[in-house]
Image 1 (spheres, rainbow, N blue to C red):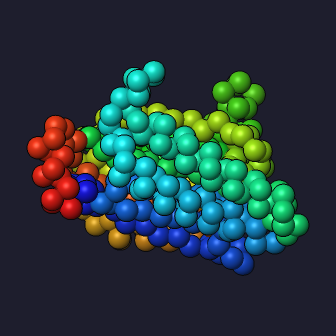
Image 2 (image 1 turned 90 degrees about the horizontal axis):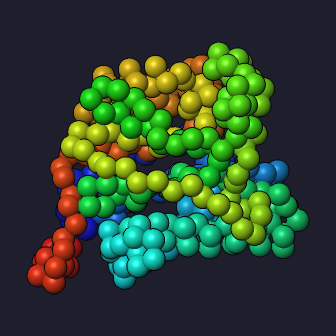
Length: 276
């Protein structure tokens, strides 16, 4: 874990924005574990922040405990996918059920749920799981790319050619998600793996950022401030608020400062344990 902490620089900020009375976003990140979690809650009263809080807390605890037992790079016997897939899927399912059951038991929490985007960095790669419209971007060699695809009505309309990208910017359906954590007793998170390169910069964000700030402007900030993550995170949130701040806004930035290959073999694992 020392290797990861030295390789990954992480900074996170969350802000209620200019309109909302309270913040229903929740974030959690741990460079030593290679774990990033961002959730954007929804629901009446203060239930949205309950949902996002449950998701981040349970997922953080569960994933950290799981990777102590099962290294995320090990291949699964049946699928040959890295164990990170199984770990993230199982822990997300646990969080989903906890939120769903809380909503069923407590009237003030009825209908609550949350979006989720989480990344587990290991062995020079990242496994990403997401549900809803919170996003992950990657800045590589100056180019910004969206690595997640929104689970939203707006994205479905774009995919089906019902509206154009320009029309989407003016749409009133931006916040209608088609998947969320805690709404149903079962869910289907989307999981993908990406190779990580030295110098990459990853941006996890709630839709309070990308609804208020165009991707081109986000790219400009990340390119100009990619060596000063606290300032970059603060600038992104300030821009969202300057443009209206109609929603809570959260960002987590992860910069790859060193390579972090997995320690394989008994001797390497022992040295890893001794170095923690």
